[in-house]
Length: 450
Image (tube, rainbow, N blue to C red):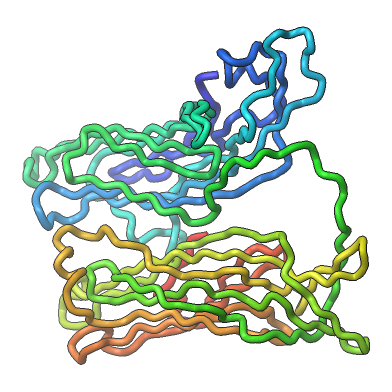
């Protein structure tokens, strides 16, 4: 097997065209192991997709500037890479007459639903930070590849995504502004959930790539056997009241610098909920103690703050853009009813959220080369994110309320008027994370990529 099927998609029809794709995958249905290991298996081993699925999301940016220091951006493309990983399982009934019908590599995992698309934010689904001010194209094409597995060195299948970039020279403005540029590179999507970005050939120092994980952690391809026997059954306990100690435990601040360096960004780490809560239902005399379950979800998002400059005539010079990585590990609360069953705690019609670990960390900025001095210079303002517990109401769900604000450090720096707002981190009916903006300022300045 040397090729994979996928659906190409034209993502941008501007002067600079971007072509991504969707639905790329390693074999998903039943297939012969010989298709992936022609030198190791002779076709006697059949593989099929297991039932476990892990979701992964990455943020990818390509940026191209003209030659010379301080040259403005000509092209900036923000993309989202999404895919799932899953384990392969051996189908019973291997051909016992084959002398080479041994089991395949332990812990073998596959990849499905791989896609690369533009990141859409802002009004009307438009990303205001994408720029297509140069004629050319960027094309992504997936192909199968093999990489050595960590620890064993055995080659396991992966998907290698080749990218080709071409910027057309513009003789009207001259080589000093648009000399033209071509490069070829690749990124490898691994079946453990990781992505590696290979150096591109033909780079001239004018282009740069950046890859940031958003959600889904890298795993060690755990061995998944046959379907486990049925465990404890689950029911639902609909609580009308919940008592819990404050969920913020062992919190510490996380500090970074925003793009252009004038803003110090303060996030947080190690926010966790209580191991146990008390629950009750009106009309029932008994209270129950509920504990965090073991069904931990690992999710993530990117929170982006943007503000235009508002001092003097040059609003561009004072603008601010900061990115933070929101990482959430959540679970449900369970009541042990008897030796056979547990009850999941619902409150206000939703699962009561259990926060195992929540962090909001500023992402390191690789910003403008011309702004390197600014990133180490004096701080003009501070952007703070502070979490607190929100108990919810009869019509609303509980969660973690994050209040944010940006205030000037000195009278001549930062926003002329302090800005701030809040957003709520909670879960939906299935236990997935949800971020809800609470006010107009938050809608104006913050966006969330999930």
